[in-house]
Amino acid sequence: MGEVYVITSGKGGVGKTTTTANVGTYLSVLGKRVLLIDADIGLRNLDVVMGLENRIVFDIVDVVEGRCKPKQALIKDKRFDGLYLLPAAQSKDKTAVSPEQMKALCEQLKDDFDFILIDCPAGIEQGFKNAIAGAQKAIVVTTPEVSAVRDADRIIGLLEAYELHNPKLIINRIRFDMVKRGDMMDIDDILEILSIELLGIIPDDEKIIISTNKGEPVVMDEKSKAGQEYRNIARRILGENIPILGEEENSGFLSRLKKLLGLNNS
Amino acid sequence: MFEFFNKFFNKPSSKDIAKERLKLVIIHDRANVSPELLEMIKNEILKAIQKYIVIDDKLLEIQITRTPSEQKGEFVPALIANIPIKSVKKTEILSNEADN
Image (cartoon, rainbow over all chains, first blue to last red; front, top):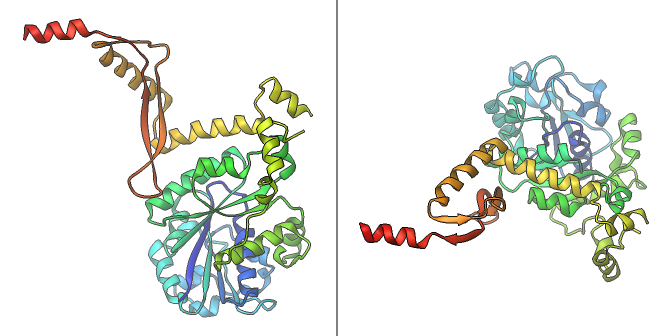
């Protein structure tokens, strides 16, 4: 029986869709049966990030309105065994699927997959409530910016209110050069504020843009640092104990001493 | 090297400023309490306490923080007041009680 994850954020543009695509792809590479559901109805994008946009026949709204069977709407990714996409509708609005319908859909598809990842629309409105309705676990994505972290805090509060407890955090687009200069909040700063468990940090990586341009998930790029971290996140979801990037860099005695003396940045 | 001098002269880095601003804004988001409301509460507390105690009202601090709740791992907002006492108006209270 599959686990249903929702990937969410408060602020838009922090990397939910990229995260959904990459974590899902790598879970399938690791031999799991994975379904990606785009719940951002009206503004679908998971299909283009995955490079599957020209294969869409039916979408999630067709399914809930009974125009096709759920399995007819699933697009099988030919590159990866066991990876499927259920696209969002482009023409309807966010309220086209109700929380009850979403819940029923996840229940129906859960047995056929090891993982269902739901790409949630940004914000806290009805679209958010619909997207999280069928999920048992939540992953919150943020970037190290004041606005994104603030909105992440709001989302964590809401998830709690909807009884999706212990969400995990992914901090996206970290720039280690800026962190070193003291011009970007580091992981500890953000965790102290949000006080939730960290699932992974993704370095800012221009390869993301290149791979999205091509419609190929960056996890398949062996040289990409972001890709490497997405692979690690997928493994952590499967229960492997993989240290989080950058943590080991700061744990040495010398760097601690430097930090103590305020010399870390010079 | 600039960072070193900045630290030397106690200039906060932009990430420190971000963190402080975030903490403040999030505390108010969580409790849904505006700074104005907090100021009103502060004044009411002052009035109530000043009946019995002489306090240093310049140093009075009132803020909303997060404290761990009894349920493991959860945090709840809490109102924290820091009230520096100058002296207690002992005689007055005692004499009032004696009168009763």
